[in-house]
Image (cartoon, rainbow, N blue to C red):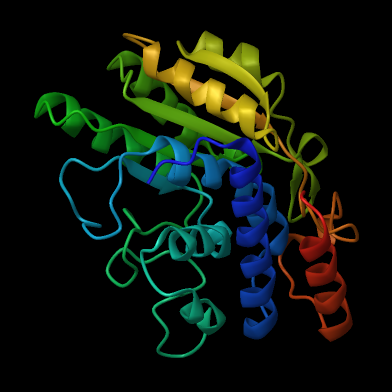
Amino acid sequence: MKITNIEELEKTAKDIRIEIIKSIYYAKSGHPGGSLSCADILTVLYFNQMNINPKEPNSPSRDRLVLSKGHGAPALYSTLANRGFFPKEELINLRKIDSKLQGHPDMRKVPGVDISTGSLGQGLSIANGMALNSKLNKDGYRVYCILGDGELQEGQVWEALMSSAHFKLDNLCVIVDNNNLQIDGNVDKVMNIYPLRKKFESFGFNVIDVDGHDIKELINAFDEAKTVKKKPTAIIAKTIKGKGVSFMENVGGWHGKAPNEEEYKQAINELTTKIV
């Protein structure tokens, strides 16, 4: 099922955001800010770009997604549920005892999760291995890796980027969720990572800058990445932390806390009455 209609994709992203807020509210914990900021990216990947089949979540030929910023799990879970990997009713069990929907993705328990993540900085190394495997075995699948911008402060990320380019992993696409906020404040104040384009280019990447909330721009970027040969692509997606909920947008305090009842109602009302 590939959705090509922009308005339908925007509505899907809105539905995913609603489920993110619901699941975190019922869990009374979680990470809404960074989950909301990557919702459009995940929507385009799972509903427009990736070769996947919810009925065959472990198909050897499927495209892979590595959510390196594993604390964004509510966004991934909501996307997978909306895509049909498991019932949406399960989303309210986020972080509950005995629930398969843990605070970070677990590939052993959740259909559609390609790798367990959460320890920041490690995801791209895993994605490199997947992409190499696809090339060596001529499987033909593509690998997508979503990195948080604060995560780029981890040294292992840059070692992995060198490997991506060295092995000419043109079946690998790195997406930076560039909302410029991390748990301790503004990314450029905590540990400056900029200029990202020049750094990625110097590491041998094809680089595309996009508005991470513009569905059409995201589609065009992913389509372009598929045409690039002999080098990996990095999509630097400029996003807004807490996107879609007015009182969460660009507020660092919403990195890792749940809304109370009043905030929950306001958030759902905003997401229900507008396309974000």
